[in-house]
Image (cartoon, protein in one colour):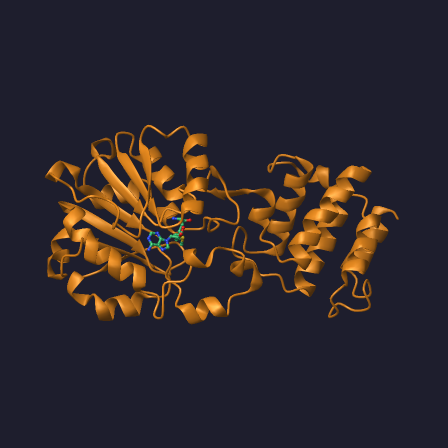
Length: 335
Ligand SMILES: C[S@@+](CC[C@H](N)C(=O)[O-])C[C@H]1O[C@@H](n2cnc3c(N)ncnc32)[C@H](O)[C@@H]1O
């Protein structure tokens, strides 16, 4: 089949007997054998994403971008390749590799990042697998000059920072990169997640400044003995989905660890514990930053006394809150 015929087939409604019908695994395998170029694969994959209603949002927000990423990655081509690569002829081995990657994405609903074992936050690449949430935090927008401004001192002067619920370690690593003299703690309850974080800390060459701890929030970390041991910044992207939301997630999101998403009945379980424990560990001029997803109203209701400030994010969701140390006084101290 030449490429224009394949393109017509892939774009047309009749390929599997109508656009509304999901192709079976057998029909998928048959069609996959006929695809001769990356461009044909791209059009075919986009159609399959639509027919199988694949969930997006873990590494890309549209089928075109995600499918193109999977194709380039599988073929070992640079992400910045120009569109001429889409017309090159695939060898049998490459066709088989693409068929296997898209079979898993389409029929197993396996997230793309778990297939490629990598995820990106900005320019930074992180190793990921099913033991950790796929990184997609709003903190990417904030860790940088906006954060230095919030802290009110030069980035070189930042000494003690903690990333609670560190998962893959991605935010602890961004913090250590941005604050060149800071010692960064990364805390997670999951030993499996910490194994992944260790890989990333090593790959980013930050073992000397990023320490990882297995702990339920701060439970396993001793209280600071002196003011200099207190944190200037406590940052967290905790699990914050209410449990009922987690029960209704698309399959792709259920491939991520439930522990990384489920924040209990109202989503606030970990946030409550974190705020209760923060006071004893935060320097008097320190701040707490927490990403809370859709929990703004719940936070305002329960923690009005802490005067949460909502930091602007590009998409207008403004779901990261800042709480200053002096406003934590009203909370009962806990460990
Ligand atoms: C939303 S993920 C965030 C991961 C990473 N910081 C990121 O932004 O990609 C939440 C993480 O919190 C961890 N976690 C859940 N409950 C915890 C608890 N009680 N104490 C510490 N970590 C917890 C999970 O294992 C998971 O790695």
